[in-house]
Length: 196
Image (cartoon, rainbow, N blue to C red; front, side):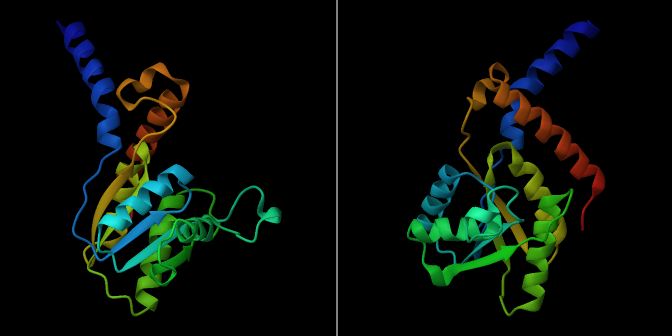
C-alpha cells in the first residue's frame, strides 16, 4: 500500500511540477518588469503582452553580461533586453533600464532589491507590477519579487511559453529534466531563505 501511495505521489509530482513552477498569475498593473536574461523569443512574447495591456512603464532588469561584453556596447542583460524591446517597437519613453550589480549567487534577489531601490530613489509611483520571466523560473522569481516589494507593491507574474522541450512531457528531454530539477531545488532554497 505504501509503495502504491508513493508511486502515485511521484506520478502526480512529475505531471504537475511544471505547471506549478511555470505559473502565470497576471494582475492589473501599472508596470511590467521584464527579466533581461530571457531569450529573444521570450522577449517577443513580452512585446505581445505590452501591446495588449496598458502599462505606463516597462522595466528591464539583469546583471552583467558574462560573455561577449567586449563585442557589444551593452554591458548587462537589462540594457540588452531594453534595446531588443525598442527594436521590436516598444516605445523608448516607456523603457527603464535597471542594471543589477554583479553577484555570485541570488541574482534574482539582487535584481528585485535593485528594482526596489530604484523605486525608492525615484518618483515612480507604482502600486502594482507584473513580472515577465521565463518558463519554470517564474514561481521562484514571483516569490522573491513579492517578498522584496511587499507590502507596498503588489506583484503578478507572466510566464513566457516554454521553449526547447515539451512542458507536458518535460521528463523525456535532457533540457526539461535539467530545467525542472534545478528550478525545483532553487525554488525550495528561495522558500527557505525568505527574502525581504
